[in-house]
Image (cartoon, rainbow, N blue to C red; front, side, top):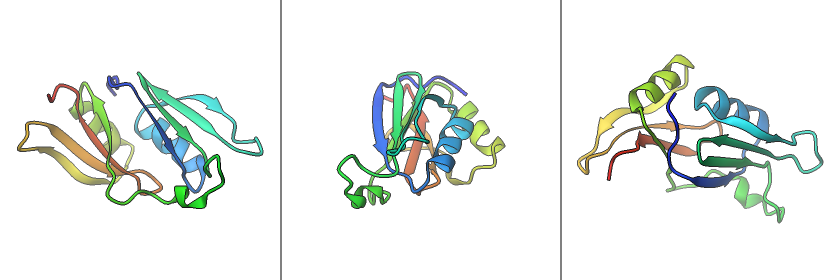
Amino acid sequence: MCHVTVASTWEIFPDDLGPAIDFYTRVLGFDIIRDCRADPDPYAALRRGDAVIGLSPRSLTGDRRHRRPPVGVELGIEVDDLDAAYARVRTEGWRVEEPITQRPWGVRDFRILDPDAYYLCIREHEYL
């Protein structure tokens, strides 16, 4: 899979770190850079290129509403080779919500959900 080229950091709050880590590493090609699943406050950090995802089953304040997937939010991942990214997702058997589509504004992308229903848009890097 191609290199993620946009620097960004997300903090998301899955119900279970295991399936989330598996999805982002196996399906999307992120590497684990911190694995604290055995700690009293479990946490994992993943990296791919300049993109970093922090995973914690609860927010730092303990406010549980942060655990719910967002409604009306799309998390974008920009890649150099959209076709290779799509092929990897399909090869790993992950469900594609919307196949590769050429948008009227010029970008090609596809859409998937992560294990906790976070809506991800995988799109070409060179779209602006």
